Amino acid sequence: MELPVAEPGPVRSEGLLLQCPYCDSEAMHKLAQLLLPGLAAVCIDCTTGDLFRKPSVVAVDMRKEMVDYVTQRSETFISDSLIESEASQDEEKEMPEDPFEVVSIFMDDFSSTKRNIIGHVSGWLMSDSREDKIDDFVQEMEMTRFWPLERREAIAEVLLKNVDLKTKYHCPEKYENEQRLADHKAQCSFRPVTCPNDGCRAKVSVRCMTDHDSACLFKILTCEQSCEKRLMRRDMDRHCVTVCPMRPMKCPFGCDSSFPERNLEQHCSEFLQPHLLKVLKAIHKKGFTDEGFKDHALLLEKQDIDGKLGKSREVRSLTNVVKNLEAKMKNGGSS
Ligand SMILES: [Zn+2]
Ligand SMILES: [Zn+2]
Ligand SMILES: [Zn+2]
Ligand SMILES: [Zn+2]
Image 1 (cartoon, protein in one colour):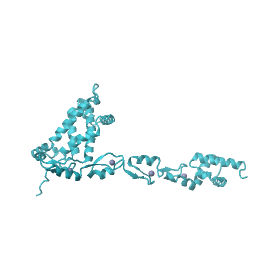
Image 2 (image 1 turned 90 degrees about the vertical axis):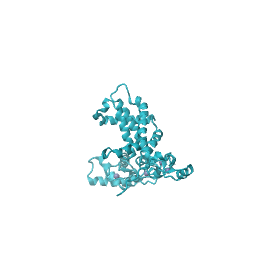
Image 3 (image 1 turned 30 degrees about the vertical axis):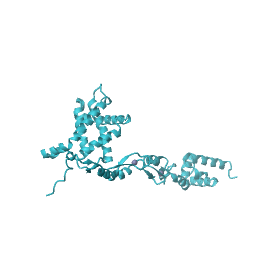
Image 4 (image 1 turned 135 degrees about the vertical axis):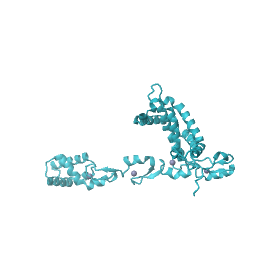
């Protein structure tokens, strides 16, 4: 029979050991991100339908109450889950192991104690307008920096360490003296380092650096459309649709083909004939037969000593060149 995987020992009885303080930066960040919509939901649910109280008015109090509640729940989480797993065989009531789910449950529990009468109506809880109001309030709080990310991360760090029973997201190492702890910290895979990409100020756990780097907005990359330009990830999308010479474009004369923008010149000289026919048909409507149009086009090309036809990049300039050439021909331009 296999032994069950050991829980990470009863932390509190090891009070004499010094615990490594580092935790997973990305997890901390993710948890910190949960807190804002969590708070927004509480503020919306307890003021909905209330003409005299706005979410922003209750936000300060609710933030304090929510942080206190969630922190307190996280502190007793280990002992609670031990008691629960001994007392009940009821699989369904078991708390999840994932720290993000655990904290979400804490926040939902808190939120449900704050709902007013309308907030308790299930239709309201499932409604889109509730979601919209929460989103709007999250944005408002972000804009006013009501609860900055750094402050949320500090709380997230505490929560994470308390509820991460499997020590997946924080360092489990403990040492008997400062020196050994310091030696470990210099090597710890959870230790935070500053992202080396120019302009990025993120502090990231060593073990998360690869993930961070593959999403870091300040990372220098070569153009996704292979124009050979090197630029920051955050500028890539704009570059690719605005100035990149490789951005795909449609033929301005209405050919079916599309091609990289920098090949426009080449396309215009290669496809001069079909472009010219389109323009001529627009100018002269049914003035020629199909063959007549082709002959006229050839004639124009012969008259075009400076090669202006091939240099036109769009319908209007080609039309002008054609009209000038025709005028010249009319006035005996061959002389
Ligand atoms: Zn460590
Ligand atoms: Zn970075
Ligand atoms: Zn490019
Ligand atoms: Zn074309």
